[in-house]
Image 1 (cartoon, one colour):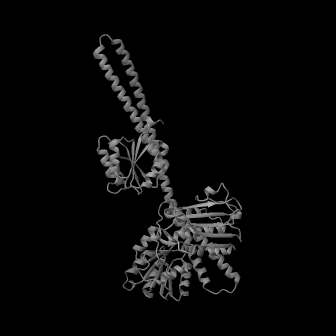
Image 2 (tube, one colour):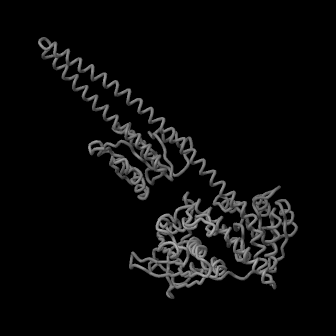
Image 3 (cartoon, one colour):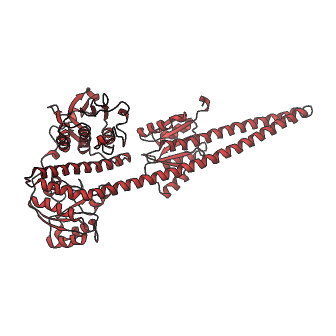
Length: 586
């Protein structure tokens, strides 16, 4: 496409990152991409140049997309300029009608599918070019008519023959124009059919994505329900003295494999949340050594079970970063878990923390290296992609689902960092390096956060456990009794209400999905009783989505724990008073 045929496309969004993404998506069209970060700036740009199409964000401060579109189409010069609205929310029929009334021709949704956006913009650019061609043809026709009128006026008598020839030329031009119009109409109709096909395809993709999310949530719930009693039973066994070494070994195997399955379920759901932009980081100043300690605590059983030699090197001086403690622990834990799985028994694993760069470029480097199977040059660029397996063979049966490293990369990027993999090839081991921004010295806390302090020791309480899974209820009750608590159990919502009215517990652990009356209904009834004003209500469920957590808080719960729940979490919840852990995520 030549320079004279390039047209202007106006990109309007108050978020610079989105403007960059629009430019990256539309760059292959080879058109002039013009930025505007507000509705006012967009109007100023329009007064200076003509635009083939406007890509306009609906949600902007000061002047939103609807107001901007209305002002644009009130101007005679721009009333025919097509506008595509960009929105990150589902558009209701009323919103869509409002958009079309102010001149919108289409909507695209965030996250944007690049092919769909390019296709829509390409159609409008082609229409603009065809419109320009038609305008030029009309101007040429007007000029020919003017010349004909002049010839008729001045040379009518002596130039009759020339005039007839000119008329013939004009007729041919009109015939060509008519043919061009028919061709243009056919192309427009074809474009409209293609756009409709794209729209239907987009709807099918959205429906498939929704069904996938519902399936993952249901899968996690159904897996967590049987995991809960297994996990509680294993923890209860750990609190008992077992003389037989083989039985102790069996208990440890069950515990490790239960934790592995729990981690796989969480990773699968986390990847789904990240790809939809639903992960919210709980950022705060963190000391790197605390993250390393927690990650080692979760992975050490697997490392010791495979008899690996682990070397950890962390600087003595505190190193502070800004981040989500749980998510960064998950990053380091996944890398250690990956190294343990892909290193033959008795191998070496090294975890090193160091500083790199100065001032604004200062970074914390977390290195996890191993003497394991290594990674080929062909696989190195792919190891952070979803569902990628380095060696999916019977010799690597512990390979997992191929989502751990993909999750690592996305979580690190959310923290403003990066992660890279290095290996000299198969059999040469591998190294993963996480780079995170260093917290500036003046903003680093002088002492560990208050949340790092040890939780108060458990105190015996009157506790009611309500769960329609009898094994889950009994195993959780067994753990609570070990701490000296007085515990009763019930196996549906109605039994839970009756037991609570009779037993008057101080703490109630409630499953949500139960027959007769569900956990929400039982919680509302308990909370409405005069004697239950200070009762600690804890939801214990396989559902972990944000909408469920919000609903538990609105129903009067003080905490939300996702199955399986370990003994440490139970102890922390029991040690708190009502309201101290309100909306706690577990």
